[in-house]
Each structure stands twice: as C-alpha cells, then as structure tokens.
Image (cartoon, rainbow, N blue to C red; front, side):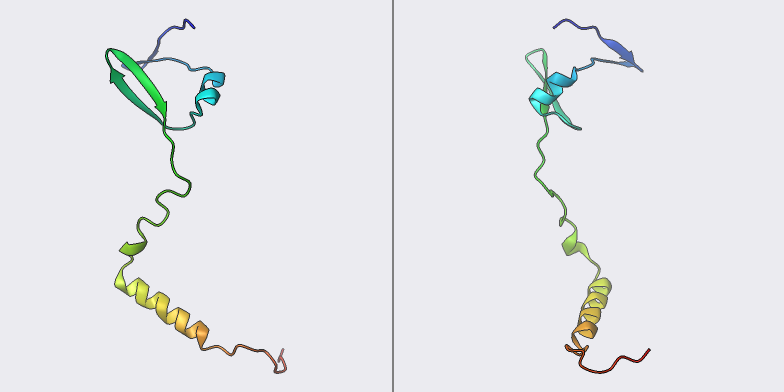
Length: 87
C-alpha cells in the first residue's frame, strides 16, 4: 500500500488504516523500533489489571492503623439484629 507522509509539527506521520490496526490488535500504545533502517511498529500487550496493586505496600502507617481501627470497630458490632427497631 502506498501512502504519503504528513507534517505534524516538526515531525512526520503516517495514517494507518483501521483494518491494519484491527488486524494487528493495536489499540492505544505501540512499541516503535528502528531495525536495519526500517521502522518496526508492534502492539503493546498489557496484562489485565496490570499495576492495580503496585502501590498497595506504600500505604503510610497512619492510614494502615486507621483502616485496622475501622475494621475492629465493625467487628465489635452485634452480629444479629433480633431486637426491636426504634424509629
């Protein structure tokens, strides 16, 4: 397929047809490399939920203590509701 380069600021760009993108499963990010004088564009495949818990261990001690205190308070509540409700 023959196409033309388009000026984008100081760079140049090429429009990639939607059929090509779908066939290669390219979505938002690509890995672009220069290999032997050729530009190679590959899709970036991210793992589902990648990085969701990356900062979970970085919680400040005060926040962790607060969370544990709240959990303790919930556990102290009665487990059954047999009494009459007052409105």
